[in-house]
Image (cartoon, rainbow, N blue to C red; front, side, top):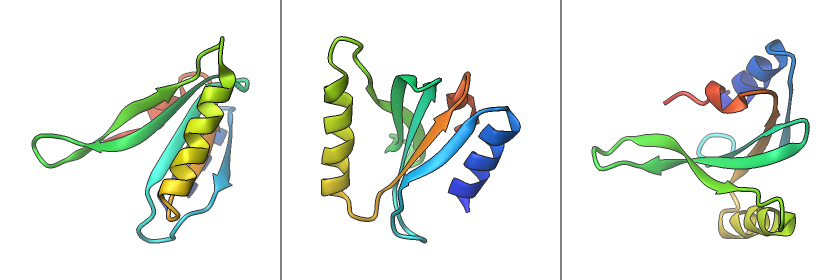
Length: 100
């Protein structure tokens, strides 16, 4: 449900969202890739906080000098977590859609 809501929200902003990898429907972790016109990729995941909550945090940013490193990070995350969802949100300031 959260994946659908994020895709609808980015579409409403005039951007584009798509599921790159489907994970476990009810308990899958989300890896959200935010970008602008397919560039400046940033991966966000919910990270545990000291107070026990889980907030969205930047887990990897694309290095323009080594774009393959970002791809390898996503591939490694897929291998580590078979329940993982990977969703791309392509819009200006797409990370603003990630609310805690």
